[in-house]
View 1 (cartoon, rainbow, N blue to C red):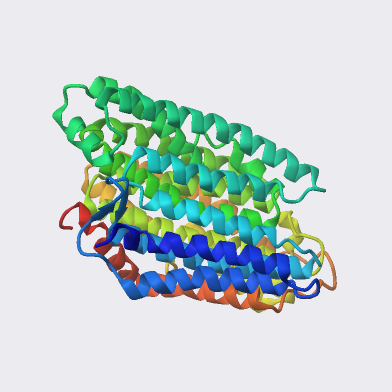
View 2 (cartoon, one colour; view 1 turned 45 degrees about the vertical axis):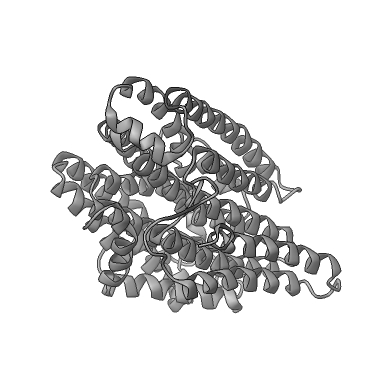
Length: 480
């Protein structure tokens, strides 16, 4: 197959983002929706293209094996593009309700998505870094987009400084791996690590690379940016950061650790255990003390990313598929959680405090019910998608012999259920603070929120469908 045809999805998205820029420049001042619709159509068009083309046979590489197209990359890209498109509807709803015109959000988000797609198909340390930087620089700008907000400026500065530090550590680790192996290609790197002669030197590089991966996933103790960015950034930006980049960060972990460093499984699995336990513990315990719902969801994210690692620690094809299932369900649930805030806020002042949701279930029963579904899923309560996500990773963890780690994860999951149930208690059992609430949203974002929540319930009822897709995508690493 022609090399350019392998990267056609990235070429299409690059062409489309140029088209979106042109539309934004030449649209009439009273037609702000033109940029939004062109962005949505662009992202969905690429998703449809990938769906129609389907899975390639085996693994196909391009450009001196710096880029790979396989079942895993196609599956992750399609889901990523659907998540990005949904986030655009939420953002449009928010900006319309607040009478804001933030068309740069959609353009930056597409550039960020392009970086994520490159990262998902990376087969070289150089491509990993290229995709990561394109993703990160766009996100820094998105956080700083609210120029009049002191909190957003502070969050952007922290995110940028800590992100630059993490990128430096990652680059240093990559340079060490290159110095030892003499190659940037992940396949050639894998061949050298399997030998075992230079594993001590490779391990030094691995430590720094894992720091970069941990930062992007928001894992403890490299989570310092997460609460401040989630709280300080605008709701659409927080919604975007909490969902789409997690898919790319998962792909980055799979490509670097499983594709590139299979000979260091013993070393990186031990390191992941430390990161996982720290993240699950810190995220769930600190979230209990939060009164700001965005900050609570930030610490919730940290704990969920710790759970995500459990499937990778199992070091089996089923474990990798379980982690992939987890990142899909988490992305949907996280997007729905912030979508719930956007819909509940409507045209009124932003509902940032947990107590702001007092009595919402009595005043708006349907909205309260959908919010409850999202929170139950995040807590891992059956029969919703979040339960199966945790069940699959814990099952594979026990099967691989890490019973104690599974027990620790279950204990902290029970601890974490408290802060989700507390919000549900406030929604349904507390008395409303105001006799009348501002009208909640009625636009496309509300419809997407309903679809999101329905998807979580559907996955909860039929988890085998999504798990089958994940197993098929991970079949490149051997028979399940």
